[in-house]
Image (cartoon, rainbow over all chains, first blue to last red; front, side, top):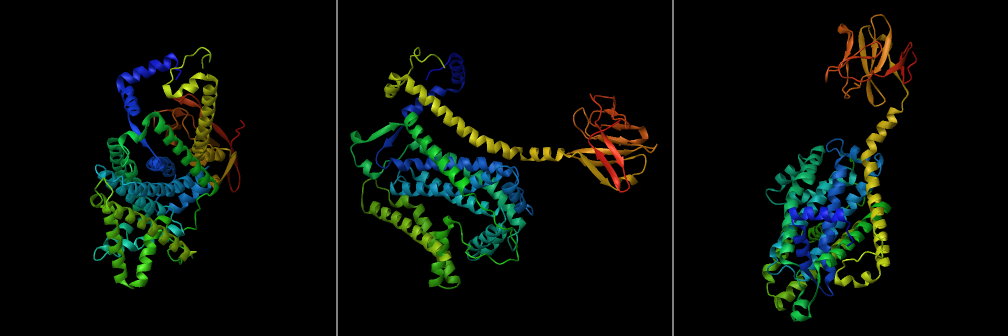
Length: 362
Length: 168
């Protein structure tokens, strides 16, 4: 870099006090494995970028959003009155969906590359918790415009906690803030969406990123099998960081394209007395569990089906979460193969039930 | 930027090709800078307009040049009516001698809303003790640097019309 004298002296002034050179030297020293599966390393970074977009656009929406009885009116104002409000809202909604998509790609690639094995178990657990929080972000944010779709989606969505035996109705009532979805619901969902969930999410994200920093990128089994001399790697800084930024730029462009060409719609204001609109369905990331519960409900009608559905679903998630304890070995064995098949089966099941769900509401 | 022929660039070993061709490097930096600037503008412009929306709407409101206050001709003497003129508060005063004055109610010192005090024949700003003449809006004492802006008043049968242009 050709630096003029003032830039250099400012840099050395800051460097003396904050030790920037140490950080740069450390980043240059750090390496990232390079191999045919390296592409999947970028998805955590893409998720992080989309989360940052969520923070920025979310704060901008906060400037005009009013929870409570005026919720719909304020979103209408943002969408149709404030300059570029439609774009900011559209970017927030689109990046929310892309965010969950990117986390899922990240999760499945971590699963199939077996990056959850020792010493990265906590990375896996914290990542799963972050995904769970991301879907809660999605669920709570979806209600905030208080249009017809968000009203019914929340009504239906709260039936799932409500069907937990014994405590279900109580839990759903507390979440809902009354017997039906109303302005009280939107107020507490707002508090969850902008304060409670971020307050849990941010430290967890810091923990997750610190773990990535501590343990570095995991090698997939195919690379581990190679002798160390044959493995390739690139410096984190500037090589990997540059590619990472390139991916961020691509994500930004995809987001800008989607948000401006397909602006997020605002439906009619909710009406507690109106009947549900035709073709109503959950967001795509809730479609698979929704469809599985529906299919099970057909096989086992009534409360038995509901309870069985929730049990099977919970069991599946627990097994998924505990995979680092099942597949521990670093060599390829029967357990490693089974874990691999479990991952593939989960992907196929999710895609199939999601497709089935969309086919059913088409 | 310095003269490209003069600067021996401290480039790390992997950028040897760039070192050999400073022209390409310079073109790349210019293109990257232009692209970065385009992104910066494409993001900050909508955000700025979004945040400036209420200010722009207020500016549109301020473009109002007259307002008719319904039934204001019935205002008793020795009292004032506060109303919104454009986006700012204003006051219509009916004096004891039957004359009328319309003034902006925003203190010229630091923008507090002033109050008409008929018993003391003054307009008073509670924030820093500024005093104005209720007939003319002139700054009488205290910190205000300028008089309150005076508006035109036309008293009709069904209301009082206040206009931006005051003709003495």
